[in-house]
Image (cartoon, rainbow, N blue to C red):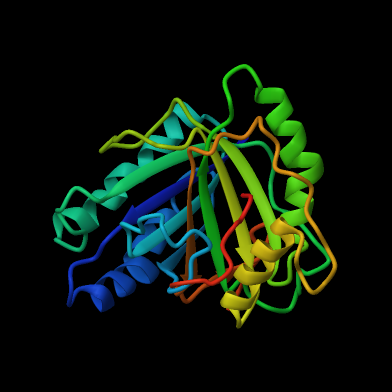
Length: 254
């Protein structure tokens, strides 16, 4: 068995938002339940506040699909026809923005003491990241032992999981700008505060007194960061248990 996460980044045409939501939490979720290895699926909408405000946010919506696949080469492509249903019914904008990226995860969620077990995730941030060629292991060690701990201990950040772009991808395929996935979960009703304190800790000026270590040079600056707020009706915790603009401080490290 192997853990995989597929990101579906897209825009829904104006006026079809409610139809897409009903489809996703209705027939689509039912169909997903028949896929081998399916764990969870949830939807998100791009947040008004971003830690890198100069980075374009071309997608309004993100769907995250999690799997533990017995035979990835057989099972992962099975998601394609289910998403084609929304595309065929005009619920995904035909404007060349849609992207599907699948990653094989290094591990499941890594949580911090910030994680409130009786509360849902409020959103996620997605980093499509890269490492400097020849320094893969250095990058992994820095992220796993240093930076992941720093990030998930920022107030509002609660968990992280990472992975590498899979050789298995779902049609329609497009170039992916990030070989490495960093998916961070939030539990906060003040995302702007979380983003500002993250940035301040990275620069060593947080009122908390916490300062992050210098960013490893093994991590490429060729990366994009995207914050999303959760909008789907069914919520999940780490482990797959179900239950019913413009910033003045800019200088993040992720």
